[in-house]
Image 1 (cartoon, rainbow, N blue to C red):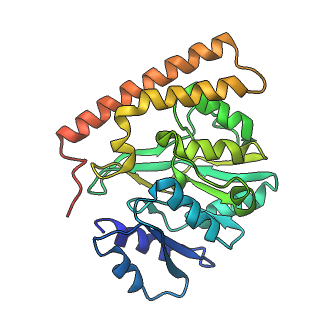
Image 2: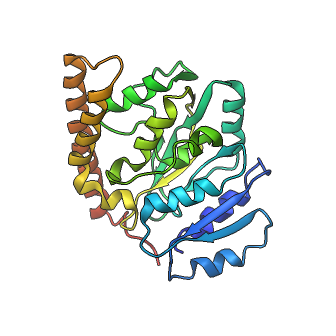
Length: 269
């Protein structure tokens, strides 16, 4: 609930109004369901999944419920800017081969203060508006991180997304990237270099809690990618991927340490 109201307001304020807004609740006990039932908008509905189902089961359930041509997943503490859906629908309409559209996003702290603007798509040529899906995933491998961003930064075509269900969290940090990899290889990825929303870092966010295991889980994903990559990764690419992973881990640990010391990660009541 600390952020659910803001998220809901950001969804209802979208300039693209032909929306189906589905909330999936996994037995929350903080008044979330009661709040959602009070939202007076015919586009909004809530589904409930069994307690303890986990993130992957939650994301799979809500993805399979989607009926529209396009699908975006967004977690309860993130935000979308007003033209986010309209902009990314335009990106997909402009590239019939694109199976997903990706944009940059701002990073905000627990109090919604902007920490970093326009993050994402590092390692992908800034002059491009679209790349083969295989190239986008290879950029993630080389960078040692998910340069495509969290689900709030992505709009999928529903058909290829649902065709790759379920989401899996056997490697929790790579829950999103693992599915991106399967979908992206079916076509191209449309790119937008302006932020369409805000990803929140706080002591309650899942990504913050997984930070301690970032090294092992990223390495595991890189090894799986390298084992099946076409064309095969070169020796130089393996070195670049190792350096990228270590740089990302060090940067994230320093950033979280500084933010925690400043109290910027403290979730508001």
